[in-house]
Image 1 (cartoon, protein in one colour):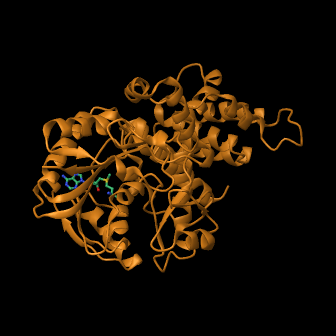
Image 2 (cartoon, helix red, strand yellow):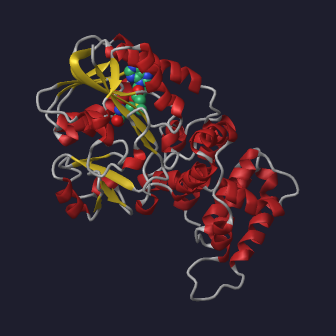
Image 3 (cartoon, helix red, strand yellow):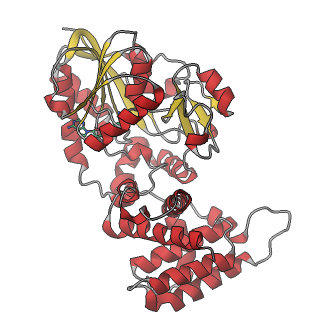
Length: 436
Ligand SMILES: C[S@@+](CC[C@H](N)C(=O)[O-])C[C@H]1O[C@@H](n2cnc3c(N)ncnc32)[C@H](O)[C@@H]1O
């Protein structure tokens, strides 16, 4: 067995243990010591394996259940889950099973389960050798996995989503989460030209979509800064502002800077604020690569002063709209922090309004699926501020479908929107203007 394969799988199991055993976010673990000693290829493989296992965990558990008399400890389960997902995705039986047994044998708490790991996986791998018509290009295990329903969201999230959008919509969102996400790019200049150069699809809203992008830094135009990665939904809030050159724009929760780059590319005079210094460093890198400029401020949005023609408030939120790309999120969180985030969003709206020029406009947005972090937040802001209104005309953008309109004048996007094109992140956005 190649060392590369073993190291990447070991790291993937440790990532799974961090998310499922300690409730940590995968993004944080990816920056920590687990991947430190691995080559770039091993890192990419470990991340891919962990992400795919989290996405299909419920299905892997169902396939494992008949072979386990009682649930083994988390560390052992994660070794088994990873191997089952790899087998279902066409991994060579003996390589996958041997790696799993070796990983179990090397672990202090998993060593004495190596016999179990070996026996269970050999039985499951044997499914692979069953009868399948030679013309069918899917292994029996993959077919069995595909027959299982899409993994369900945990109750802390499923219940409020069912209440907000109904059971069929939640099932459609769960299917979208399982399908994962394509890669969307925002062009610095001509999007049609970028689509041609990268072989991507120009979406009706102006983003460029790649279904099989490979390494991002190897895409044509990367070094010249011709684009940045930004989901099609995340690209809409700044488009709603219709910025013109020279306008003073404040981006209040700016990092890693997708919206800052859009505003700077529109020729605006941008001030980008974020509380996190390491995350501000990512805006610096993105600005340098794209040759765009903005003033960067490490600080609290609630302490920002000044007056601006347009404000972008992409407030911290549950990020439940990004589960397609972050399948760890429902497992790493339990929903307990959301009420604090909702209160912070309201405070940020109130403070941001004090920074808005009399004829200015502000886009409030969150990558959340929960109305409490979107529609309700705006309704409550309107009630608190008598002179405030939503500008529904801001939604009149190319490619924006009327079905996405929300009652109070904003846009509600969900991962099951555009299912035939590969979906989009869950997002809420509305443009607020002062009338008095
Ligand atoms: C949803 S992300 C922003 C994404 C960004 N607008 C983009 O398009 O790339 C939220 C950001 O808010 C920042 N943040 C959280 N609390 C903050 C605060 N009190 N003041 C300023 N930034 C804050 C976080 O560090 C995080 O970078």
